[in-house]
Image (cartoon, rainbow, N blue to C red; front, side):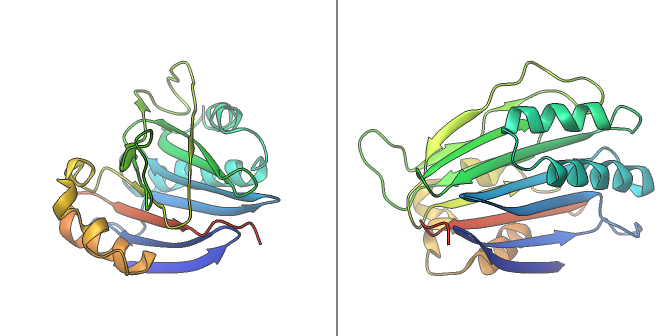
Length: 216
């Protein structure tokens, strides 16, 4: 497994990847990009494996970075337009604004998204899953609709590609690894999720970000 971690604006974050055995490069890519009042996060999975998957994912990340200050719906549309000559990607994108403690996210395909709240109220569940729309960015795009949720300090955002079993999203709350090890940093949590839920039959990537509550 390969791991990278850091701090960006209002979050601490980490990414863990594992390349499918027999492949030279991982076709799952990520972006953590600072914004004036927050941060843009994305995870992209190029369809299939090998050089063509890597090329599609790399172009998608470059496009997201170039247009990072656009709303997330426009970002996905920009990627769709740029990737028409590739095999396409699936992707999930989140824009976090420290100024108003909000996160707007969108998912096309099967990059799972999970938000675990550190503090809850009657009006706010303990966890929220990213609504995913079927489709392929660069090939067949469904009508786009983003969702905006409130974030508070300590909240955890997780993105995971389809090399990770989706059962981590539905894991019973009392035994969920993100709750059992709340004191762990994003790197430890990302590594544990990939070790516990990785399929081993596909490229895999897990991104974990902890919201700090500031944009400095």
